[in-house]
Length: 189
Image (tube, rainbow, N blue to C red):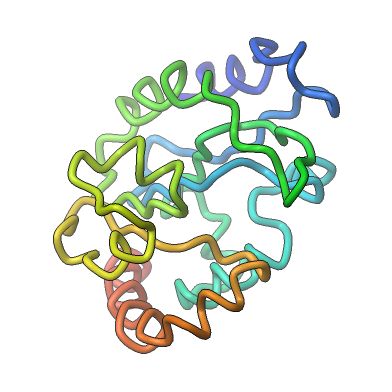
């Protein structure tokens, strides 16, 4: 696993497409139990090199009901984004994750994590890549999360930009988050 992580952290495949340069941000261990598959690092995470080290990460840890030490324990959580480097700024937020990372690295990583039991799919990009039978919208996919268990659990992005979505869909924090927390708790205790 360490050799593969070193290889990924030295990756230059997308260098010519990344205005801010390469800085692959991920975390994994051969004993990881839960994979968090998000979109791509944001500008803050690009600078710090720490996955989910921003407001989105704070909310995600609240949803998971875990502290920082637990969240950053790679023997519990593998943090594997769809794109490992910050893709840059777009007109309305960050650009989409680079398409090269997931096909190039995900299978190789997951093959080295035989104890993975749950894949938390955050946002449309991860859900489109991993769910064969996803619904027409992210909202419908998340609302029908039971269909994807026990292996996959789709979530919206925890970004503050999604506050309106969370208000419109109060069922998410009322109904789904407690189930998420219960599932996570089985791996943390």
